[in-house]
Length: 89
Image (cartoon, rainbow, N blue to C red; front, side, top):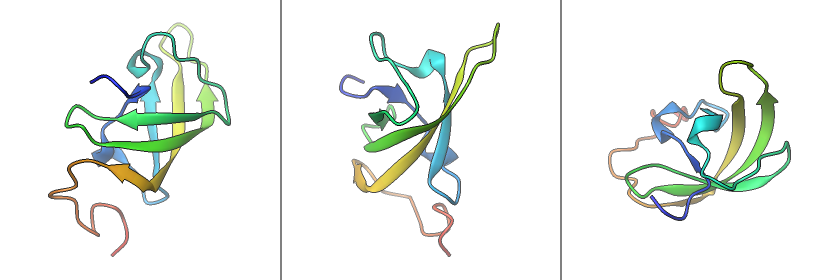
């Protein structure tokens, strides 16, 4: 999907609205550093702004990045997402 910096699966959001992705999910040309704001998105067209909060170097495996997702910026197909899914029962 064009327009996102990092591919994520929003179903993997934790109760603190954080999500982790491997470096191979980062679009070409996007450089991530702790504190950087990026656009995360999935293949269904959902997107949200997020901030890189953790960068784990996993040589030789791909690096991992954890993002704090700003759900107030969520845009897309929220159908099927419930309060329970977001951890806010």
